Image (tube, rainbow, N blue to C red):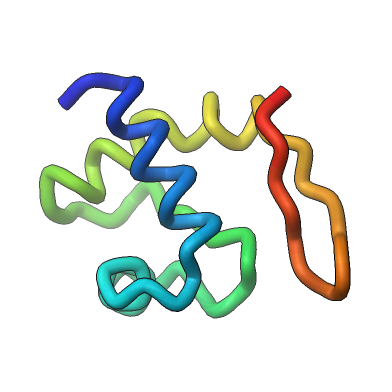
Amino acid sequence: MSDSFMMKVAWESSTRMDSLWVRVVKAKYGCGNDLKPMINKDRHGSNLWRGIKAVWDSFDENCDWTIVNQKYAKCLV
């Protein structure tokens, strides 16, 4: 899968907390309930999960995580 697509998936997984697929993936791979997910790079998984893990460091480095209304808001820098 392309990095740009996986960046979009990482963005969606961080901003659409109430989406069913996000809740399923976070529960399956133990990302926690925080708004900023914990990405465990040691866990094996689906192609989707491996793609998210592959781009997560780059995604996280290019996001500005700030607190707004007791929630995290992300802005790509």
